[in-house]
Length: 64
Image 1 (cartoon, rainbow, N blue to C red):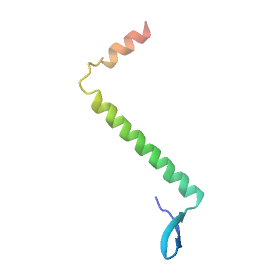
Image 2 (image 1 turned 45 degrees about the vertical axis):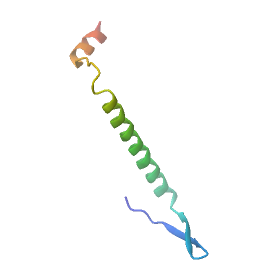
Image 3 (image 1 turned 180 degrees about the horizontal axis):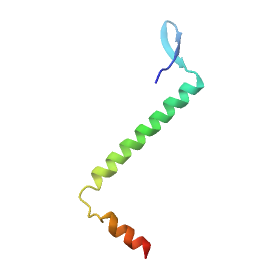
Image 4 (image 1 turned 120 degrees about the vertical axis):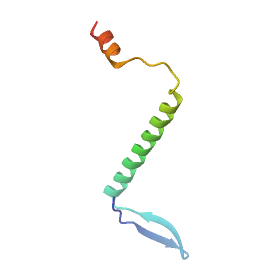
């Protein structure tokens, strides 16, 4: 991802960043994806010791 930030300074210190809207949307989507991945990893870790059901049994039960 390539971004083109514009940094605005106030009293010689960097205070704000302005991004083109499309770049902002790309960053927002990437952050949402990152949060989803973190949640998936947490759930996977939390459920690692729970009993599982084989997929073919689930499919058979659904077809009933």
